[in-house]
Image (cartoon, rainbow, N blue to C red; front, side, top):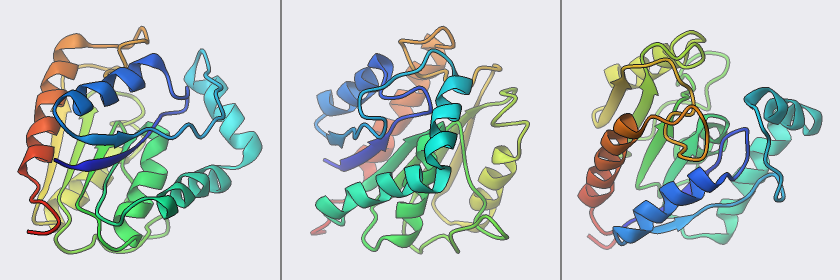
Length: 198
């Protein structure tokens, strides 16, 4: 059993995100799904990004980071797209992380935008579509490959297609086959983690 802190994407805590969390719970895991938008959801990525931009990307990321203060140290940090920002910062900077799951997005671990090096002993999975104009076209896939090349227990899974939010069953971008495979890989990952006590 793992305890997961899961952050939603720029369209908010959608029914599809809730359903994904429920699938993990059904397998016996504890999953926290904080709502960084206070109940708001958005019809498009652009609308969600505009809302985040109005508040400030750094402030919104730090809202997510602060949520972890109320939770145990031994967490798996997970995020969908924008949600990778707080998830990756926590995985790299908060002691005790058990693992990390990044969906549709990834930040570099070196250079200007990095939170620092990847912490030793923290496994990570990164998932995205191979022709997603955001994940594959804006550098996230390169950041993911850097992690896989330098971190012992890191995996990058690419799925055929060009959708960004492909694992959100409540959105038109949903790809059921890719999501089924992604979910099976995530459950295997969570199941492989040893209990914090050993």
